[in-house]
Length: 565
Image (cartoon, rainbow, N blue to C red):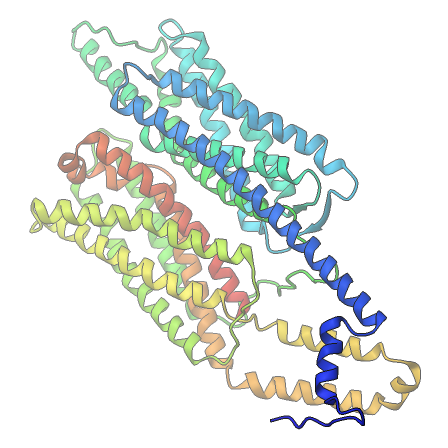
């Protein structure tokens, strides 16, 4: 207990101090308390206004998505009352509104004084911007093929169908430019309008992705035209709209089918970038906060990882080319499906073992966990987990179809093993990447010591002259401690770098194979005959773009893990 000392008048001293503190104390102390309370009240009101703005813009996006989803579902289940043209009209209106906001953002918002005082150094990395430009260019080219296809059938199609791809080309072009050049912006003016515009654009991209996943009208139309052409060659009459120039139409058809998955990839990337920009609206960063001073990408003596990855890349490219050459013919031979799935069954276990070994190496490390709040890293983890669900979902549907039909055939056994290994490899790789992203990057140790030394040098001149020797000894102790702490981790770091570079090359290989050309999941016929054409079309178009996005996103995460080691 605290002793209570009484003054000559008999009033305890501690009681008097408590009363003085409760009443606010002397004048200066009371004024300071009022300023603190007033400042905290302003901060609290600012946070409440920011949360209200985020809530309103989020509800706006949610209502737009529900409205568009209702239109798309009505088109699927009752295509008489709601047609594909009605859905296109709704999306055209949304794209025009988003287009107007993007023009306003570029022309007005960012030109206002103090509009972008901060830029998030973690947002919009190079690989995201490169993927945005690549998939945006492919989506524009897809719409060019679509325009060419409509023009080649103009004698039996409406001229209005040309308007929708033209609007989409304009929307994609401007959106790609804005996201490429302003993905790091932390807007400080017109925050309510900016949040609503970002959410409207994000909802539009999400609806474009949903329509691309569920709409198979163009694919059915191309297949019906091929069947009608075969009937015409045999002498039978048909009412199907046929192209006037068969060679040109074949180019448009194959180009459209090959580039179709890129439109879904583009929509997913845009949604991710727009979400980060929405989170950064009104965000205040420290003006002295340095950017992520990452070291340059060097192999640093890594030998086995690049070698094994290069072997997997060469084998994957050879199998991919053979499969695509065979797919250009009338039918794909059974042995090519076997070769394709055998490659995956060989590589996936090695990747899984590498991921498990890397996770064990993370556990043996002594690097601290990075607990600093980072919305970009949190989004990376969410996207990594969410994108993995696409390929995992396809694998589970394939497992059910194989087990329910005939699991004894050689090809079916390969597909079954491939599906099981895909699930295991995705889980193991997610564990390895997420654990690596939450480790303190090794290059931040010397940087922090450098800043500490700069702060020490900012002392008065007399003290600085008197403590030069102590400062030098302190820096020497820090350097020796750093070398002593991490010298015994060199072999662990080398193992992590070997594993990371191997997984980077393997994920690039597995990104390339499903991203371009024909997809064996749809062409082997097993799941398509089990679930039906339309159901399996929706499952594949939902899962495969997510799978491609997962491989691409994994490469970015693995590069971070490699540099951090």
